[in-house]
Image (tube, rainbow, N blue to C red; front, side, top):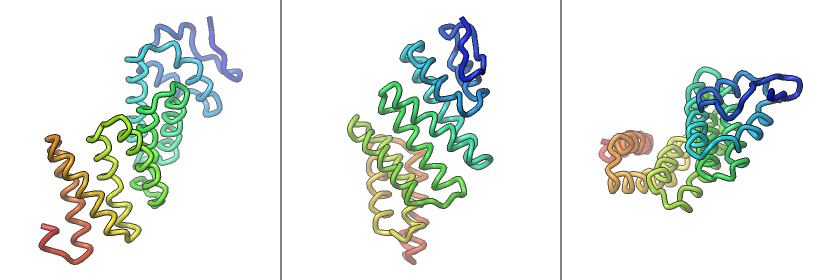
Length: 195
């Protein structure tokens, strides 16, 4: 069997593709055929393969964050579509985070848009009682809040994330939160707290 998407021949046997091959096939397609490909391939993948594809989409979106923002956003959109098609909120949260990263840290300066997507991802993690990822969203929106002059909200988000990450022993992420909180306090002229 050969799958043809809008006159584009893709592959013969969808069930034998690895997650890496799914990604390569997906990204080789023209934009108009990518959603059809995801819709077709999704239900031929077991849960572990779906998880791997979602993680690869997030990694690829992050890869293009500072080098090709349009590709970064395109892949983030594909990840959101993948989450919707599979009805998997975890994948959707990954897609929201990828979009938020693009808006906040990809040179677009669309900080409110980023905050909205971080909040949507955080709500999914909260519903699934995954506090570390929820704290990661709070950490990630710390600087966008500061860029908008919303320092009290930034401090609140950062302090909450700091507390959760400390409780869970997430030392690297905790260090990043402390650095960003320090920058917020420095902007506010509170050198003692910044240190």
